[in-house]
Image 1 (cartoon, helix red, strand yellow):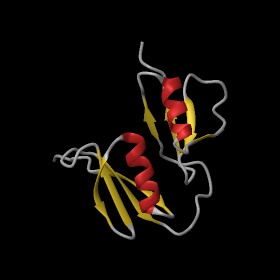
Image 2 (cartoon, rainbow, N blue to C red; image 1 turned 45 degrees about the horizontal axis):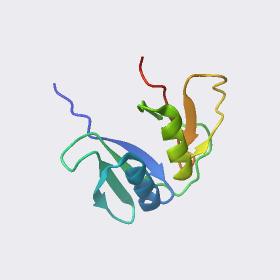
Image 3 (tube, rainbow, N blue to C red; image 1 turned 180 degrees about the vertical axis):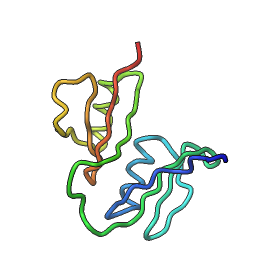
Image 4 (cartoon, rainbow, N blue to C red; image 1 turned 120 degrees about the vertical axis):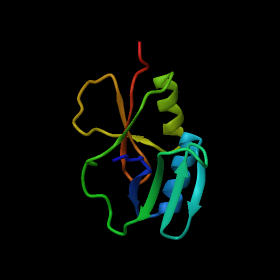
Length: 116
């Protein structure tokens, strides 16, 4: 049996707005857009992607799944994403080498340090 990882689904109150935010943050392309779904990928034919699907109820607690990113320059990338509308969040991580941020709808993601 073979499996191919297609995408990660992100529930969103406004799929288009959140999907556009992530497309700009990641430099990815839009491959599908409708009122209830918005899909982005690194390139049109490259997987996996992120698909934002409408869910009317608001986020209630810490996300059970989140994305980790490892930039070349953690400090610069955190500053860029904060300027883009992300915000720092405390999920009980304490003092760590990574920075926890949240997108405009409160979905957490981590910005790791560069590998040594």
